[in-house]
Length: 224
Image (cartoon, rainbow, N blue to C red; front, side, top):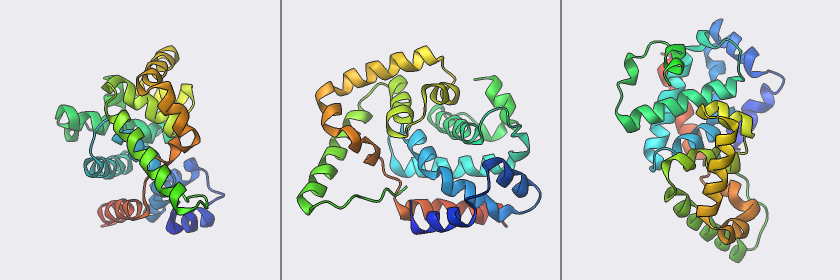
């Protein structure tokens, strides 16, 4: 997390997502930053699994936040807010890939019907370089995966969502998630995955400047 993320979360640690959403709807629009700080990395990683370009992924996440803000009153609490938000980002990414006129979709529910900076542990310079090289190799191998497997692998193994959460976000059965994850692991090769091991969550880092940039751009749109 960035220093800004830590500061925002420290000041609002006792507020659940649902409370923040309610307060934003009631007029405290600036509190939307709390939600962005909490889920920036997850949304970036989810979108990055669909589009193979960091800058485009950043742009899509920004658009997804604006759309989520515009439709906050449609969040009914039937799923976790984080899941609802992740699905919006995924819809936005697929719409961009398919060149769908997503802006004509006025209701998130209608659409549903159709369809960060990680603080490094202290290591010597050689170890840091080694880990960076491993991450580059992993990211390249990930980008070579078939489309159907990338999102499942990203949400389950990199972002750490449960099978049930991943299934809900991607609108798949849990069995399908398990099957795709198994095949993705095989394609990435057991040796590579074992070598990276616990360092997998260091890949596709959501670096501080990107996080701050998205927050600033979204707030500029929703507060003016």
